[in-house]
Image (cartoon, rainbow, N blue to C red; front, side, top):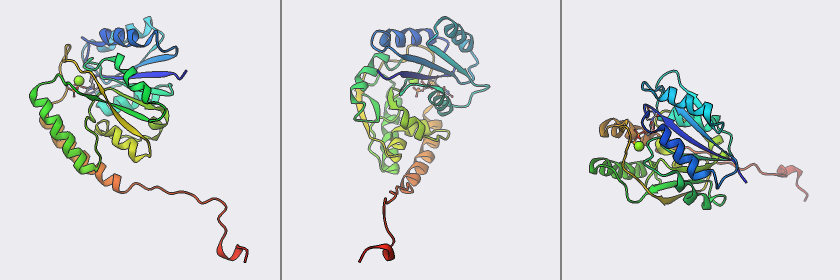
Length: 244
Ligand code: UDP
Ligand code: MG
């Protein structure tokens, strides 16, 4: 069976880290023989660092990475994916708004699909957040020429090959399914459950996300038009070498 790496970015999530570890362990321990939990501390200023260190010393499955300072969610996800070793990588946020058990709703689509993105069907967020996300997805799809309904869903499952194909820039965690498609991979969206944020607070407001998200979507749309796909011909002889 393939090894699974579960990767979560963590910025000031002292309230949820232990619950997150418990929920992930509970979800996977009887179903997957070989797994690791990679927790990336993105320069937290609360007690997250010491809670993470304690977890790592108690559970050999836990691997902790600390950043020197806050570098942003894309950097945290990127470092976690690159430092992980599973053939399959599951992404999840630390706040437990998505349920680690849903990894097994995504799993059946592998290996036919290379990247399975969750889709929060009954989203438990404020009206403002739900509306801004809907508008955000529509604008992103319009600018990138893609049709992903819930690119921001924190629950994702991808093959190592997809991870290896990424070279991410700040903000690109919002475009992972589109970037995977641009790199030639098969992507599907699958319904997952969603809960209210029971611990801590969201790290984003509507406006900061909207403006840079718009600029990023323009860039990704541009890049998508510039994707190069070439195939090298095998055994092609130059015209003068061909037999008459
Ligand atoms: N996060 C991070 N670095 C940041 C901001 C957020 O690692 O600079 C993490 C955060 O701890 C959480 C995930 O990214 O695990 C998503 O953040 P949040 O839940 O605040 O975003 P929302 O779900 O409200 O969009
Ligand atoms: Mg969240």
